Length: 248
Image (cartoon, rainbow, N blue to C red; front, side):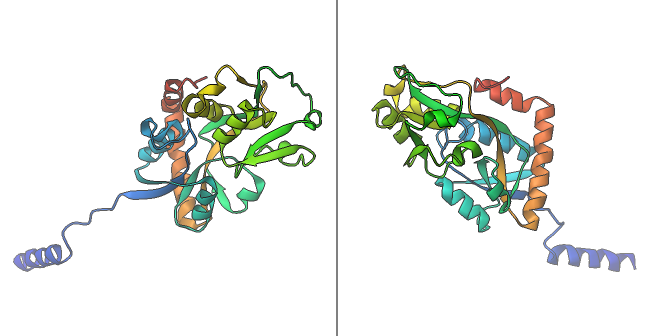
């Protein structure tokens, strides 16, 4: 009888492919070029990617990345072609279409101007006489987005807007401070010493992952949030930010 059980076990082992090995959990992420947060040519794809990767690693996920334009990130995630996209600001209309992760970093949004121009304001109404550069697909603070009385000129990206500002084709450019500074350092050196960020920022906003509203993604989102909390508590996030000169 014992021998029969051994033979039966051997039969099941051989024809079931051996002992069960659980496949690693994977997550597919869509992202876009937005230095210094994310970039294909940056160390570890940028500090935002590094934080996200560490959080997923803590909860046992492997990551597959794809880079694409910002609007396509949202379309592909919503269509289910990728599990999540980043980095994303919170917006009420987006929250109807996506799950949001806990914030993994923040971003200061405000105006750049030429140093040789005297521009100041107390409310946005004070800026009605100026041409303001904006980027296609950028989610702006609600106060600015709803200010239809302002003269807003759309360009495809930060580099084009910065060059327009240097060339006096616009008077102001509203954008993320760190992203614009990275674009100046890498692509618009003629802006150094010419442009400045107007303090204080209009808004300091959190950055998130966005997930398509599917049951599997709700599980992934909760796992990511748990991993993120781990690396916040053990100082990993602060270390990554300090390496970029962004720590508090």
